[in-house]
Image 1 (tube, rainbow, N blue to C red):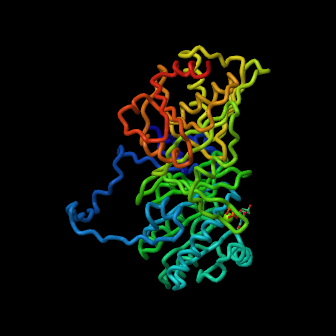
Image 2 (image 1 turned 120 degrees about the vertical axis):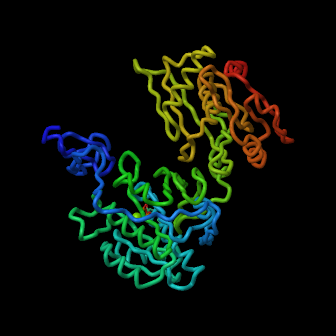
Image 3 (image 1 turned 90 degrees about the vertical axis):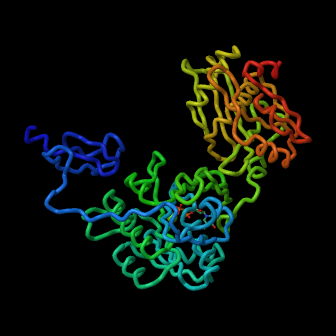
Length: 455
Ligand code: TYD
Ligand code: MG
């Protein structure tokens, strides 16, 4: 091995390895994260054989466990997303676009827990806003009398020293990108600062047994800024999403060591803060106009909860040589696939048409069960024939045009029935399921049956 190749350059954010130093990591796009690391000469082993390791104690799986008691916030949607309440000693990372309402949400959580505990053990530490700004927000939210301990600082050492002397239930750090540890020689927000600060705070949370909330900014690509490792370090990762123009906000669990993922909490941003939404389906369908082509209602499931949403498609003559495909709230590759299946298996032709697809209300759907609803919306717009307004649709489309079964069909239909829908298009495998009274079923096994619908 030549002398030159004894060092390699490793991105501290994503772990990508380079033969020489460069300012920007090509893999994750971060700047100044590439650091020289030595490759040990003796192959992979870096062990110092002179110093012996200690003996690890093994235990049985079925030993007694210390059952943790979850802390209920009293905000139903938060308790749902976290898997039934906050777990003492756990770290929760909350990410989201600027201005989406992270600080508002966390102040509300802090005040709610403080009001239950009544013992001044809930700390809100802001590194972004001054005390007065947080106080003004608290007044706006009507929680100024909750026994929350508020501080404005960015020094992690001070925070650790303070927490060490007290016994908090809940600590909120807004945001981890503003925090600073003087032992690390880089600016706040840099990868090494974020990682070091988070590490120290999480270690403290585990030791003292308090719930730690970290607010994380997101990058332009939508991932939480800073090292990916941050997502591995914490127990729960929540994303707070929503469209700027809409007042709905969705809190989504993407990782949860103490509960189910893909569970969502739905909120509405009002002038007095975030209000939880008990019946999200009604909210997402509120502005629907009946009898319009290109619109249909998808009966979806988010986490454990059924959710009806309107899918809107617009197919128009294209003025471009390469027709446009624009998607909001769904996967654009999946739309291309469905258009290809409709062309190949049903004989529709979209080559001269622009196709726009929108999930109304600013919701993002990732379920393949929406395929059939998307296909129906697109065909309805192309043929300019509206679908019945009291109809819900679900089913996954395969490449050969078959309609596949989806999870929990009965739960989807129960929700539809509750909201007054009386017709449903379902996969043909639904035949075995127990039928709900008051809903007429159209079972479809293959997309070519869709043509009959529009003739
Ligand atoms: P904020 O919590 O500051 O967002 P983040 O911390 O994610 O950057 O929320 C800011 C937005 O929320 C701001 O545009 C104003 C709006 N808002 C309301 O509509 N109602 C309210 O009661 C509050 C406190 C904020
Ligand atoms: Mg904020």
